[in-house]
Image (cartoon, rainbow, N blue to C red; front, top):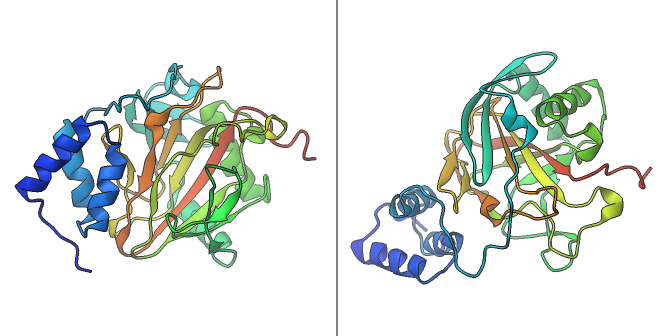
Length: 283
């Protein structure tokens, strides 16, 4: 089906009316995409309507008290033992930090090559059971490294730990994802569903460190629809967003998606960080 490249006035009126009625913005975008509208056009239209400001959905937002993450206290140049990393942009609510040159071109290529032969269809967390399962909303292929699997992976994990101030043991194994043309990850949260948090395995997820491993020719943006934020993939850059606090609350403003790739392919690496040590009881 050919993508529709223009938004008619009647649809604009419907979007505004539907937003005002309290419907989630991500549901509106998904409906537009299903109707054949271009994904990027759908998101940018919604952003323009809300004036690039966060959207409040009455009756949906659970309590969440924002706390300043340690990484936010380090200024615009972040330093690890082996490099300086520049902050490109920062959003306070939800907390989103866009970083430049977290990995070198050579490191990105090495990570892609190490993961290529181990890719399998990606899974998602079932919101009812908390178990992993295959899902139509996530059409990428992926794989996961073991913690400290080799010196190269260990160096990346250490760099993330130095930036975020979370111990390496609080992080799940580094995951690499590959998206082909038309592949996407629809709007979702990274934290676990209420009641499905296992305190014996590190507890709730509190943050995500996302690394772009290649330049995408078209599409593939990471979009935070409730915050009006869209990030274009750039090789070696990274995004850190935090959605859990010390009180065990989670931030529903952290809803995000990966827009379908329309040209080329997309490679990313993801590190999910939990409240505590994941491996104390497992090993």
